[in-house]
Image 1 (tube, helix red, strand yellow):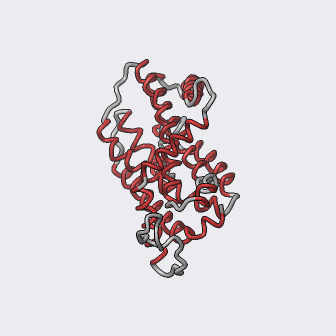
Image 2 (image 1 turned 135 degrees about the vertical axis):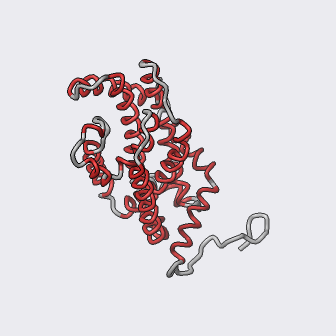
Image 3 (image 1 turned 60 degrees about the horizontal axis):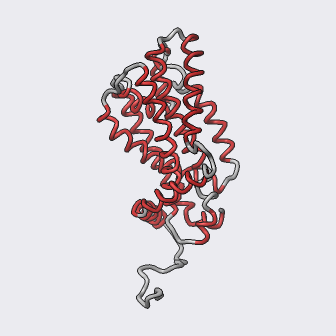
Length: 282
């Protein structure tokens, strides 16, 4: 088929060849690779989403920063008194935890609707589905960057200096990769089954209370090893621990890496099997 300039297209616009065997997985990997090559488009779309969401607002995304700061101050004063904890140590821990949980909650809720929200673009333009997942990740990363101001202010008030910042670079890369996988997996499930968003919302509420967000892991003495069964705990600990000057145990690192591998395996299985039908489900 010829392009506008008369040259032959590199690949057909519509390929009716049935996908069998490993062809599903190959197409899925090609989609992920193609989406990563178009990362600039995903970043631009995510940036435009933030601008349109807060168009006409005085503070814009800073409203999220203000609400996070109020929550840290309120919960910190109440739970600090209940747990008999020193605010100099508890408030930095709480600020990091709430900001990270806000990102996890946002990327999870957005991931359930990552393809349905982009239905018009999916039906109008031939793009890798991974671009829409990158768009969701970028959108939530921008919100996270706004909320980092809360952590900086808390550390400045108590005159603390984050430790082991260089160790956070590979952890941040792991979080970014996992965020992309989570967006793809939940996007596929949320497009096929419209009950997924409320189910995920309910599960997140439970996970919030059983994950050390408002309480510190050190409060658990007996059975602390079972906390590794919660996939959120090791992923939070490898990012939060070094900032607080704590070195996570080797078992925590192994658990975080293991959960990431499992997440990507499940994502590729779902995405490779259902990717070809997404355009008809949105």
